[in-house]
Length: 61
Image (tube, rainbow, N blue to C red; front, side, top):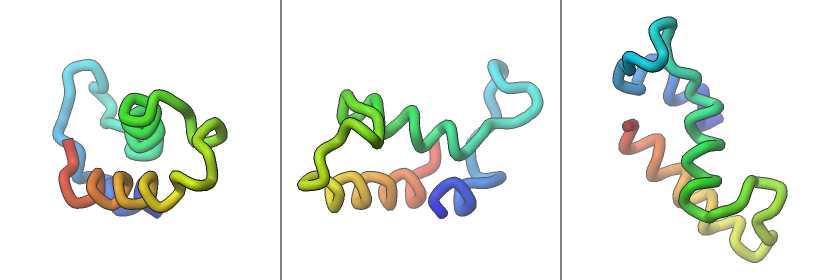
């Protein structure tokens, strides 16, 4: 759902001449922020992950 909300909202990048993939952007940001992929993050942190994803949607970068 977050990826859908980011379609067309990410700023252009010279590294992505055909446009940026918002789904990959969310996954990469989550891994960078938490140091783990979605699968590796413990269930106890799920709300923290969801809050961070909401932040990404509100602040596309």
